[in-house]
Structures are given as structure tokens and as C-alpha cells.
Amino acid sequence: MPLQVADGVFWVGAIDWNVRSFHGYTYTTPRGTTYNAYLVLGDEPALVDTVAPGFEDEMMGRIRELIDPARIRYLIANHGEVDHSSAIPHVLAQAPEARLICSRKGTESLGAYYPQLWDFQVVDTGDHLDLGGKTLSFIEAPMLHWPDSMFTYVQEERLLLPNDAFGQHLATSQRFADQVESWQLWDEAARYYANILAPFSRMVLRKLDEVARSGLEIATIAPGHGVIWRENPGQILEAYRRWATGEAKERVVIAYETMWGSTEKVARALAEGVADEGVEALLRGLPMADRTEVVKELLEAKGLLVGSSTHNQRILLNVAAFMEDLKGLRFTNKIAAAFGSHGWAGGAVAQLEEGLREAGLDVMTSDLAVRWAPSAEDLERAREFGRRFAREVRQALAEPVAAHHGTEA
Image 1: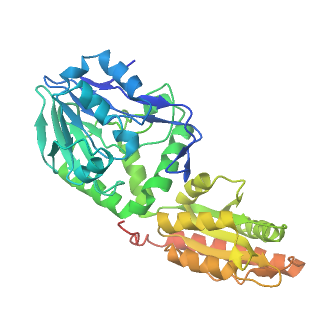
Image 2: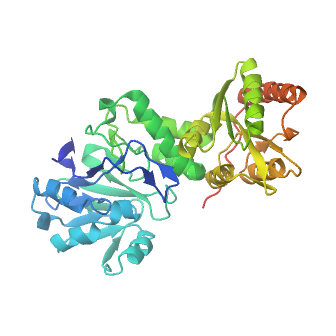
Image 3: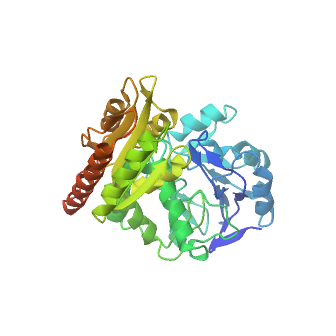
């Protein structure tokens, strides 16, 4: 059934209990997700966003409990990605008088996905739409997380509908953040930011500053995925600012892949050294550990140690995939180092160091490329490097946070 979010505004989306991956298996979703759509009941009703393929009937059923879909006069597409837009043709077929509203960039993405659509009404930041009793205004939000992204704001209810910002991949029968377990909510919110929005942290900060300067009053934030922030919505805004500026904890993530156990022995010695200094060490062997989860843990970690055995003079495949994640996510203000093992020919450690620099991390040279199996001396050298790395982490956290150096695309 539909659920009231604010006076005259209803959630009419869909719950996907079974989805376990997003973005082509690059993002695992162990708790499912929701596709949130919102019906704004003014004199001329507006539907804000739609749902993913296969969930059209679920959404339309909820709409019919409130109004005849033919009464919809506006369909707002905050973002053209298919999980939010695929039901647009379905809605327009049942609401023939509805106008499709999107950002200027939205005409490109929507026009490519749905070439049968052509009658777009383009809006820019500051534009308003009077529904009769409800007023919508629009805020362009490029690269949060696509060029076409924008926010819709219901003025009378101080309700922000930001699509892919401030969300979580979380399937639940509850619709509001205060109704779910706090640890679960923040675990998924952090996972979402780390794996989707981290590359765009500079734009996140700009948008947060823009919204703050505008004096926009926000009583509720209703994102495109997950649950709705109705009590103290400022808490997710504050979290985004922390994550975007690279604030971190005394934590070191140690991610590695091993062939015959040598690299794992070095990883364990490094973890012991880090812990000796009182810094939290998270040891994550790949592929047993989920890369999406490791990325989430790295979001609030100051340090990263990455290790791999050498195979065919290259790093192992699961670490290679993790390194590609890092290059795309462009985390800021983190210290990193590489380690590994090899037989007759090395190469993995040098490649890891090069990849870490390419990802924009501050790299410490470790000289921890162990041949064959680590000796007692090798393991003690790894422990000592772990201690030194932990001290560097602590010292860096005592210094002012540097400016974000991520990319815009």
C-alpha cells in the first residue's frame, strides 16, 4: 500500500527483496533495495521518479489506491538511470496528459534509453512548478552521481527528493530511518556512499555548501533508494560532509590475496604491528571478503595496506579487481603501502605501488616483497613496518585535513 511521507506526498515505490548486486555485479546488495517513487497530490498531481524493470505493476497499484493514474499531469525524472526511469513509458501510457520534466542533461540519457520519448520539459536550478496547493522547485546536482542528476523540493512540506543522494540499498517493510536498526542503517548508508558517491566527493561538498547558503529548510529527505530521513535529516548531511572531506579513524584496512600462504603470513604480521600501536587493523583476505564491504570499511579508515602474490609477473585477479575499484573511487586523504610474495620472479609489489599512486593515495614504500616463504626475520620486518605505518596514520590524523583531490568524472 502507499505510505504518507508528508501532507499530500506519498511513497508509491517498490521493494526489491532479492536483488544481490548492482552496477553489473560491482556492488553487492546483501540486504536488497527499494526503488522509491513519490506521488505529490496537488490540484495537478505529479509523480517524482519511477521504479526498476519488473516493478511497474507494483508502483501503479499503489498509485491507483490514491488516484486514477490518468490524473497525473507531471512526471519528474530526477535521474535517467534505468532503476529509476524504466517505468516512465509505462506511466505515460496511462497518463497521456502528463509532461515529462528533467534536467537539460536528462534529455540526453532519457532520450537514449527511450527514443520514443521526445516531449521533454527542461528545468534548471531555481525553476518552480505550481501544482495547485503544492509547489515544486528544482536543484541541478550534476555528478551526484550522473551528469543528469537533480533534486526536487516540495516547498510547502520542506521535503527534499534527491534521488541517488543520501540513500541506501536496504529492503525493509519500514519506510523511515528511525524505524530500522541504527547500525544497519549507517552500515548501508556508508556502503552506499563509499561505492557510489566517493568519486564525486568534491561535487558533494559543493552541493552541500550550495544548499546551506541557499537557506533551504529541510524537514525530510526522501531518497531514491532505502529509507526516508524524517527525524533529524541533518545527520545524513553531516555524514556526507565527513565522508566527502575524508575524515577518518585510526583504522588500517589490510586487503590481500595469497596463493600458498606466504602473502597471508606477511599480512598477519602487518596486522600485529598495527595493533601493537593501538590502531585498529582489519584483515581482509580476497576473495573471501566482499570487495563492496572492504570499500565501505576503507571509507572511514586512514590507512590501507594491499598485498598480493605474484603470478605470471602480475598481481592476482581479485586484488587486481580491488585496485580497479580504488582507481575509480578516488578516495582522499589516505595513506597506503603494498606488500607481497613471489617465487623466481617478482613484480606484484611494484605494480601495487603504481596502482595506489594512480588511485590518488599517499604511498609509503615498504620493501616487503618476500621471496618464496617469509623467514622469521621477514615477519619481524613486516611487524615493524606495521608499527611504523600505524604511527604515520596517527600522525596524519593529527594534521589538518587536506583538500580533496578527486576527479569530476
